[in-house]
Amino acid sequence: MTTITHPRQGGADGDVPRVVVAGAGFGGLAAVRPLARAGMRTTLIDRNVYSTFQPLLYQLATGGLSGSDVAYPVRAVSRRYGAAFRHGELVGIDAAARQVLLADGTTLGYDYLILATGVAAAYHGVPGAAEYSLGLYHRHDAIVLRDRIMAELDRISLTRLTGDVAVTVVGGGATGVELAGSLADLRGTALPAFFPEIDLARVHITLAEHGPALLAPFHPALRDYTRRQLAGRGVEVRLGTAIAEIAPGKVVLADGTALPSDITIWAAGVAAPDAVSAWGLPQAANDRILTGPDLRVAGHDRIFAVGDIALIDGQPLPQLAQPALQMGKHAADQIRRLETGRATVPFRYHNKGIMATIGYRSAVVQLPHRVRIQGTAAWLAWLALHLITLLGGRNRLTALVNLSCRYLTWRHGGGGIIGDRPPGSPLDTLARQPSIGSAGTN
Image (cartoon, rainbow, N blue to C red; front, side, top):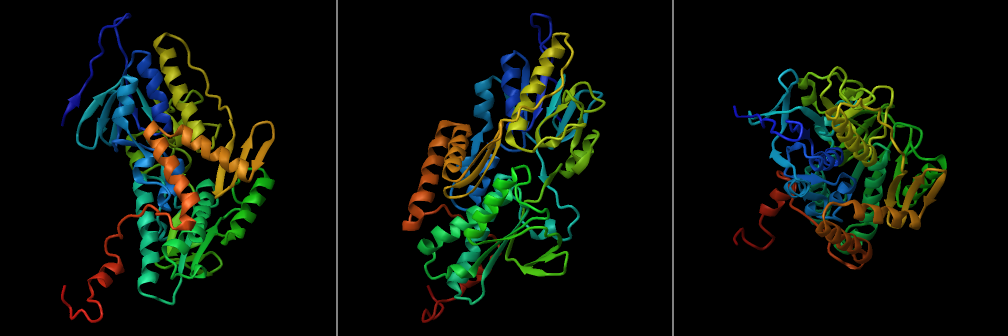
């Protein structure tokens, strides 16, 4: 075991506080910058060497963006802010000794700890959901889903099968809606160019939502617009649909109906990863870490939790980028207040609005003061905001180019971004079979 203590060094008051930030997502990065600039010895740790821009993962999954478009090197961010980066996965916390344990056995000492490690899929006890559905919470998830989609299209193209391809998206929140709409765009614009031999009617997209409406946080008029737009793009929208089981090749509903599903994507909520239970911290709904109003973990004066992993007692927040950004900055401010002998203050979320895209030239935007936008104007606003908030000028430029290609050239045969067949694909066997008249030789 390696122990890195980072002893506090002399400063104006004789001490420089050590702050460890676990997680390089929106909340973690928002905390690192003010902490490092305040002169604190800040160490950022993450299991990946890159930060993922999660709002655009569905574009990666449907071939509109490349993996590098949504990833930015964490070392570049930490160097820019004057913080240290440690590549590793947090597996344990010793609050009494003020140390964190990484998966490789390394321990890091801290004076303050900010947890911003993010969440995983919440399967709500549905049998087979974890085993037979795909998530969309990490860059790897999106790449796996993209390759699976392309493999299924290849399957019906190469084998000339009479069967169809059915894709089911479970969950009618922003992720589910955006993914279903993007799949509809893929079918409507890319298939005629990439797979002209495939009848579009053979590719089915279903969006299943347990609640009575899509995009629950939005105004009813925007929800209805979203449903109509998806239906107009050929997506079967099933509201009030409870899932009883996910099985290979099908989704079983609570009423006993079995929907054929070659690809099932789970976008029905999030929960803390199982590893969080080993940290010895209080947990609440969906195993998220319970915090007080100032974002300090309940019962711990020097540990903060921000972003999706945190649940403020009595103040539930939407699990979006904006709350995570504001929480990260607030946690950093509270550490600075504590170091100057001042009391902490409660976190107050400033709602700047919410938005979701449905597909090409279709989106919904809901701003404060009852401002609601839909259609092309909303889609352009969504596109501009997401390009601006991407980390790195290179990422912004390549994402702009790739999205422009998607929306402007795909229908004319422009190339989409593709990957490899998933390991063990039936197409591997097909590819190894000799062609007719080849006599089995190369």
